[in-house]
Image (cartoon, rainbow, N blue to C red; front, side, top):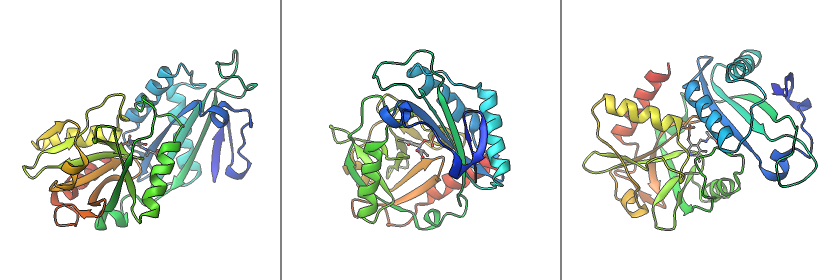
Length: 279
Ligand code: PDD
């Protein structure tokens, strides 16, 4: 496949950055992931707005404009013949002699690639996914989509080893923050959709925002508040959202079935609504 590195399109196997790149040495960088369906980027304005915000929070300057960023994403979709999949963008503070403080006069590194993935006909949408809970080991600026993902890597690996598809991370007070790479939702027995409010404790999910808007359009009640692991286990339904999986029902948390232990009607409806929005 064809990747993009600092202005050039190159076969993925030849795509290279320096070992002194600050993304590699310090995780000093940010990224975005957007879904592609029918060859079109889904909700991409929201992803690029979040990228600009992540960059600004770290005082990183993008080497290209956001208009050029879209052109790069589209070029990767076209050149790789992607009808369904993902586009990944990453900006780091560039390559410089190893020194913790910002280097001067160094051009940030921009890399991008695209991947084919079955998003619409995902088997997990039919079966639902199982989730474990783990302590949230991350830093206190989780609102920045930084490439420092070690806590998420360990969380997802724990889920995989437990035969689960996602790990919900839990703060020191016992409240769920979010999934290792997705936003966490529950639906109470009274039918209220609950998700944690945006703050520095979570990443402001683009899919989260779209799903909440769609739910509001349908006059479904949505409440932004933190929920505990115990409340989640006792919920009528649960689901997760992300660009890579859209909306997926959660059918089990730490081995406890949620509701009837099968994908809930509301979660299935929200997935269908999101698919309509995306296509
Ligand atoms: N992850 N929370 C975290 C910690 C995430 O990493 C993600 C996305 C989300 C969902 O955000 P959105 O709906 O904008 O994708 C929430 C991407 C998909 C990833 O790292 O691959």
